[in-house]
Image (cartoon, rainbow, N blue to C red; front, side):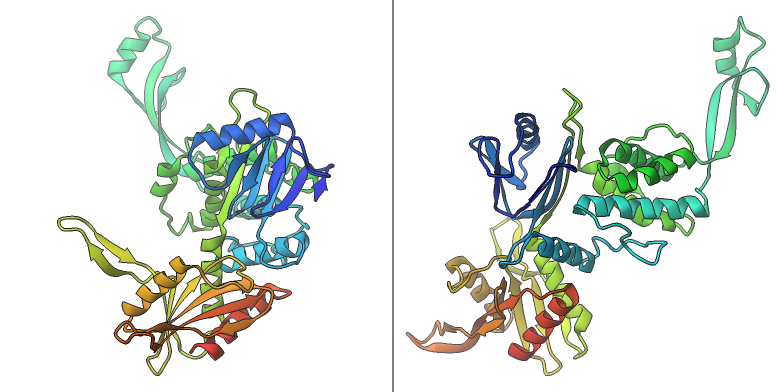
Length: 416
């Protein structure tokens, strides 16, 4: 899909974009160079470079390169781009990537052309709400020359700076204003949105916020800055806006050389997202008192004098009768094929370290179907054991709630 007016390209994961071929979708030379430069910045898994193009990996989300927005969507069946855009947004909401307060009756006011538009609007919603309630203030210390006496004189600097200007005073005093670090972050993001936003429906709201926002100095916003932020009762309303700010500022890569092909990357690992979505689905519909463990560590090997190795299954479920099932999620449609040897060996190990518990490999698919399977008994040659390693395929539903309910009910009925 190629939207020339808004410069939006939508593709599925593992697809490719080229400069020299493609019936409707092609990159320009400058866009490809920007993506190649971004690729060189660090070893990241979003895409690989191919001849005169790029090939996307298992990461989904959005890349903005100058005026071009590339939306990478997941795909597990034959449904089209519009369906998977809605499903991706629903999956992100389910794992709290979109758990954003909105002061309006609707979380999304506009029909976003891309996930990027949705993030922008959620940030605008949050910032409008904060501005309406009033920006927080804090005391800050000011030192400098003044033409009138205010605060206390700093005598050492007064002598050094004003020995020939006795009409001036080098003073130190405190002021209570809106120059708070969190306000600076919001202001910085608003200026960034003014630069990179391509959605005309959001333009006026961004300009209105900038008009009503106090002009604040720039602030360095790296990972360490955001890691140091702690919230109090007064600053708690800022939390969601700051979370989106972090996502935007950390993933924005300005084009220093030309300035017209800046790159913004908001990308999500589909394997991690699928795992989180399945876990959220189980929790949402769990009315059977199933005990749920996520990322439960178990030690399984250690080098003499070295660190221990851990195994971390995705999900461990235990029902009221004590039956335990280890679930490992895999974001791939295996069709009629068997799981890989590596996946089966992994599940065998999980089973052994959970008291020979049954295990299951959970995949998305074109239909919902459970295939039973069992390991051989390691103590008896060519004899099937009672330990199962089943394959569960879950068909993609029409909406997120139906899909989550199907995941839980199928797990419950076939496994627990």
